[in-house]
Image (cartoon, rainbow, N blue to C red):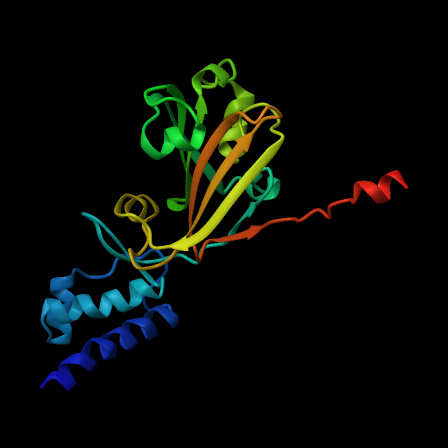
Length: 247
């Protein structure tokens, strides 16, 4: 009994995948309710959900809480440029890509206080940014600056600061060092919800720390991109041997 039941959800996934590939179900279209699909395929809702989970894992279908299952529109990848830490100018300037920004003053605590090397409870300027193409999210950023270093108007609508935010760029004065640590990992529940991605699909997570010439940390940022929606480019500059330079 377990064999036929176990394979049935793959048969359903294959059928729905074929309907999507042949445009019988179009990008952006909402699938019939799970109850209607389960009835049509003569299976339980548990089996039907397993079939949908296969398609969600493949990135063909996304489930939006409270609305249902939708065929995902083909998404163009964005590019993250390491070093200065920003979306590349061409990506950021495209009209199709827009970024929402929420600003606030928060208190440093735990890992964040350690990363910024400030006492617990120190005031920070926080920026929570989410990039979208249409209604599809592409990435999110949480950017923190010690409040006394935040440029004038950084929590308001000052154009230059908002332009930097919309590119996920370093907001403080030009730093001496920008250190970025990148890893692939599963998203947290909040990240999966915000990015509308499968909780088992890996994300590219980048922790960026900017330091000035005195060694003071002037900014820390946590960037998260779904692995199938971003390319990251890091450029390495050759170190010049001072002895050769002097010779």
